[in-house]
Each structure stands twice: as C-alpha cells, then as structure tokens.
Length: 509
Image (cartoon, rainbow, N blue to C red; front, top):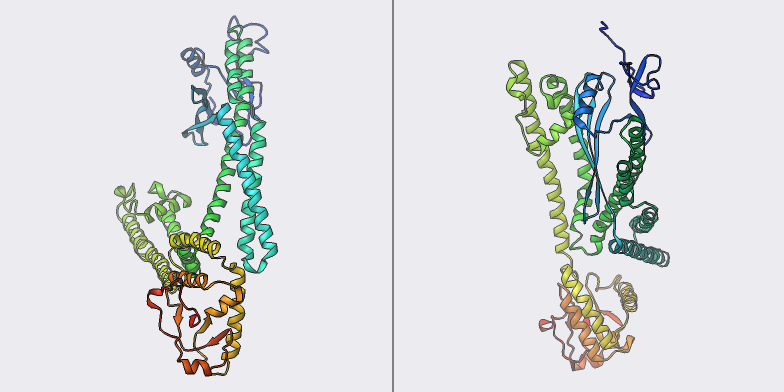
C-alpha cells in the first residue's frame, strides 16, 4: 500500500463532490459516471467551498460517513451548525462547533456563537430616537466648539480643542452610518422564516430534493452570516467611538484642578514613565526569550516566545511562580528554571513594579501639593454650588459681567505695576479701592458689600481689608488713584460687611 500521500494544503478542494467511490451494485445510472459515484455535493458558503450533509437521520448518516472515510488527511475543518430562536426576546443565535486539523493531525475544538436581536416596533423607535438625539447633540456641540475656537483662539489649547472637535465629528458621523445601514438590513425573523421553509417545503427525501434544500439553506445562512458580520463590525466601531469618548471624558476632568489630579499626575509622571517602560520592555523581553530558549522544550507554557510573554504577564500579576511541568524537571533544567524564576521575581516583580508605583506616587504628591497652594479654588462640588449663588447675586444686585470686571482689574493691576516700579511699594500687594469699583460700574454700596463678602467667602486667603486713616491725615492726603499701593490693613472680622457699611475705606487685595 501507499506509505506517503502528498497533500497540497495551500489550496482548497473545488471538485463537484467531496469523495469519489467505486459504484456499488444497484447504483442509478445517472449517478455512476465512469464507474465512480460522488459523495457529498459541493456548496458555497460566503465565498468558500464546503461539502455539507443534512443530519436528518443523524445516526444513519454519521455511520455511512464513517464507512466511506468522510474525514481523512485532506480534511481541514469540520463544522456542525444549527440555528436557535429565543421566543419573546426575539433573539436569533447561530451556533457552530468547529474542529480544526493541523498538519500533524492534532484536533482543536472551538465554539462560535453569534446572537442577533431583532428590534420590535417600540424598541426600534427608541433606537432611532436615541441615534437622532446623539447626532443633533454632537452637531450642536461641534458647531459651538468651532465658533468658540474662531472667536477666542487665544483662550484654548489648540491640540485639546481639535481633539474635542474630532470626537464630536465621530459622534455625529457614526450614528448616522449606523442608522442608515441598520435600516437596510432585512429583519432576522424573516431570514429565519426562509431558513425554516427550506425544510418544511421539501417535497421529497431523495438526493435531488435534499441537495436543493441544502443549497437553499446555505443561501439563507450566507445572508445571516453577512448580517452577523455587519453586527460584529459595528460592535468594533462602537467600541472605538466609546473609547474616543472615554478619553474625552478623562480630558474633561481638567475643567477643575481638584478633579484634574488623574491627568495632572500622568502628565507629571510621563517623562519618568517613558524611561521606565523602555527599561522594563528590554528586561521583560529578554527574560521571555531566555525562558523560551532554555525551557520551551520542557515546559508547555514557554513553548513559544509569545506564550512565554503571556506567561510572564500572568506571573507579573502574581498568578503563579511554580509553572506546570516544573515537577518533572531535574538536574540542570531544574536549576535553570529556578534561576530564571528568581531573577524574574527580584528584577521585574519586586524592583521594577515598585519603581513604577514610586513614580506615580511621587507625581501624585507633587500634584497634591500644587492643589494645596490654590487660593481661590475650593472643592469641585462647592465651586459648582457657588456658581449658582454667584449668578443669583449678579442678577439681584445687577453686578457687572465677569468680562468687564476682569478687564477693569487687569488694567488697574497694570497701573499698580507701573506705579510700583522703582518705588518703595515693590513686593507689596495691590489694594483696590471699593469706592473706585462702585463708581466705575455704578453700583450701590449694598451691592458692593455683598459682592465683597462673596469674594471673601470663596477665598482661602484674606482678600477684603479695612484701611483706617486719621481725619487730619485724610484731609491732607491727595485724592488717591483708582488703584493705589498701600500697607495691608487688618482683616475684617469673619469677612462680614453689612448692608449699611461704609465702603470708602474698604479695599480689595
């Protein structure tokens, strides 16, 4: 007999039948061609050639397949597939058990299950409404960001702003694509009805009718496969979109210094982390190569370089140190394993891992100290609440807009700096006259007093001060400028200023 048989595994079989056998007795003439009869008619499934059998009488068919040698050295894969419908939930599942054969004859099994849920009338309307709402919100946000960037380019970090705009574009475009392609899909319930009809409408059990049923089955199964592939592609795309929004949410924490500790810590530690990962990668890969080279032939988890890296990741998280298969080692091999294991634990697990933690902790401590030096920033929730209170006071007492106030204070500060150069006032804090603020914006004394109390309550350092002058000195003193440097007076008691307080001698630092 034949000892060796060459198989070309670079190409797939495309013959009309899977096997050709000698014609047995009583074989119909139209089946027996040149003394051979074909077994297993060719079918096409999403572009690939398959040879399928319908397991209607499974025991009988499997016995005959075993007798004719259906699975031989040419077999690449064997799949058993069925469809499952879950009532009420409208879930349609394609279940496939697949056995793969490698060149050495080893068999590896795998289970593939894809579930598709049809959206009923109510859920379909909700789905469309959510997608449209997302598109509208993303469009409004994108237009607002572009407008703000064009009007005030100096106020924003260009890179971060461009990322925000791109994330809004992604959030606008993807739901539109999903909505359009989803509307073009055929309901899965209809496809399952067609699949069921391929069996129910079968007019006979002879070979011709079975071949027709199998062909129709694979036509419908191909459509279901395409819809399942469409669903899987959109799952991946949706994951990318969500990850983009996740990064956007992390960047949004920069809105307040107290909640920006995550991004600030990473930013502080980034320089040291780059050097750490450079050293870590070299040592990690070198140890993985040593494990594969020295122990790969004896321990299964170190059999390939990739599996050795995967095993070291698990060792890094403390999953194991005594690998499966070490118990059979002896002599030099056992010494090599423990030399490798101890080196990995000392260098990677104990030293480098703690170096990484030290880098993060040092950066966090530095960021925390920086936050502790903030004068006008309180906790995030307190500042959020104070925004509502500030808006209320602004409307009640008709306080000036923040832009006007910032402009006035900036110009006054420049005037103070010009006056203080070369004079004895260098190094002293500027004192803004409350009377000057009142006259500049036409406010009442009550409004200024409430505003000063508000400023004082929101600051962690003294801001509102009283300056007392003798009557004679006040009469002799010339009219002070709007912003005049002066000695810092004592802080008002608990920062309280009543409605009837005199603001002439009240100053804002």
